Amino acid sequence: MKISCQYGLEVYQIYSDGFHLAALGLQADKGRLKALIGDYDQTWATFTKLKQEHASCATLYEDKAFLDKPGMGAMVDELRKAVG
Image (tube, rainbow, N blue to C red):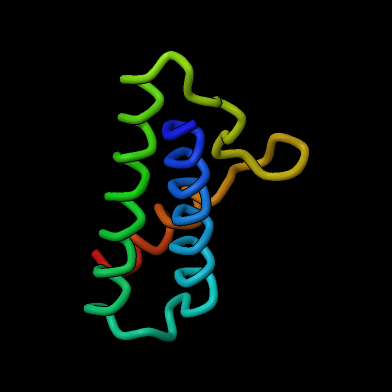
């Protein structure tokens, strides 16, 4: 149960970080964007580690959009390139 709750929290945080980045886009100052990208990267690392360390962890979330198009990670990478 604990792993399932942690999984849900991490997926929620990935969406939260991604939506903040999408909402601000390039309108935010570079410092703020870099901080948000750092938050996303940290959350993604924690999520990946959770799945690797716990065999019972759900594996439903994949970084893909509708019809297997690039997911949120691709958007974050574009912002990452833009801020240097």
